[in-house]
Amino acid sequence: MDYIFRFVLIGDSTVGKTSILSRFVDDDFIASHNSTIGVDLKVNTITTGEKQVKIQLWDTSGAKRDPRFKTIAHSFYRGAHAVLIVFDISNQASFDRLPEWIEDAERYSVGSLKVIVGNKADLRDYTFPTPVSL
Image 1 (cartoon, rainbow, N blue to C red):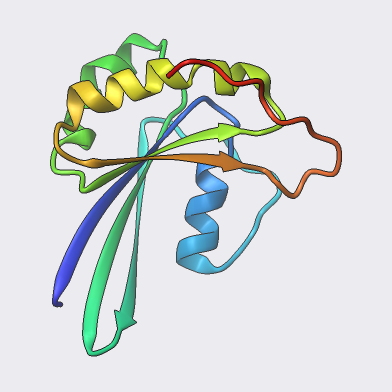
Image 2: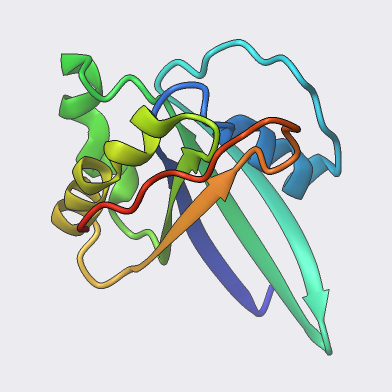
């Protein structure tokens, strides 16, 4: 293995973090998932040029307000190369809570890349969230 990267997916419950994980690792889409409890890990190895890259994807529970989440949050952020902060483009509340998720990512994963991901673009009737100051 030439490279190993650790990515963490965070965001509210039901924004589609598990669907992103399933699509990337298994090239599969399942419309309905059970809620992630705690954290789930999947690994995908890709080849680019002559290099092999192993990507560890950590799918976290969206239950941020659960005190058990807060006590373990710092452990799965540690060592992350990137944090994918996911929101549902058809759910204004998930967009409005982005600043909270960004704050957590900044606090627990200093130095990692932060990426905001708008998910569920496949929905037919949606409205883009109104801008907020991040």
